[in-house]
Image (cartoon, rainbow, N blue to C red; front, side, top):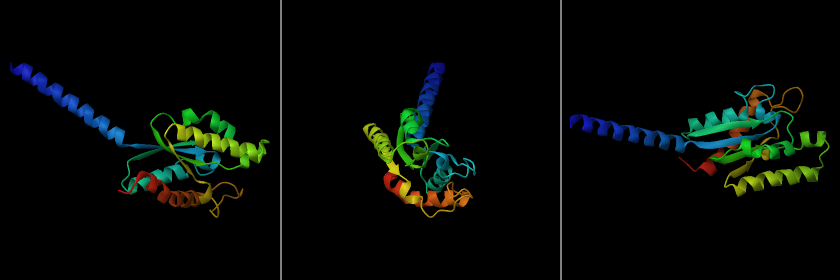
Length: 174
């Protein structure tokens, strides 16, 4: 009888531990940073890029978030649209998209095609219940590398700081 009670207690304890672990994992908010080279961290590395900086800032504010960097240097809106489902898998709550026309125009896409692709990306995210945040308005006036295109490490930090209030407004105050 004692062995049965012991086994039963172990079963209850084990089930409770698994449930608590699942609850803890479910609380983490999945965020995806979608873009090209400036999202990827060209010239500074992914650890200094704005997605990693923003994740650190949000965690310092007490948010349980995980930001996946889905930036690929040289990517176009067509490429982002093609990889959207794998870049923002099931369970993603927010996508911050830093999409600019530079790579599209270099590859011959018209401004109208660029705008249509961005619209399609946002529409597909909304259809899946994912909040889409445009980061484009935060990009101007930031420190750039010598090529004049890519952000410096300080530029990435400033970009993340500019995004922070908007992301917090979606997550809700702690």
